[in-house]
Image (cartoon, rainbow, N blue to C red; front, side):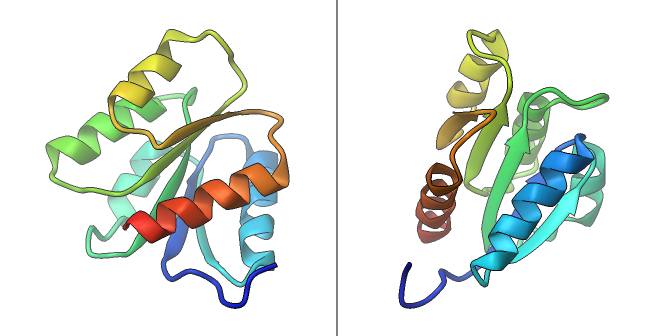
Length: 126
């Protein structure tokens, strides 16, 4: 693996409990801090913009979707690197997420190592 874990927290926003738990356990297994939310609204209520970290964000969720969350963060002046995860290829929301500044888009099911490299890269940018 690597000599030391990058600094920061990995915020996970996904309405699918199984995905949320799997990503959280993966992040924690590497010695990184993870905080998971079932909705974009729950994340917005709890997020401290002074926190270092990155956001692993599902696109399709009830209520506010992933792109809407990205847009709300931007409107509030909150900058956090975003990794989008989605099960839908060829989805217009994917393009919108990239236009809104997502660092990368990963399609479910994604490989563990690809997600980890994406998180490490995002944490280095913040």
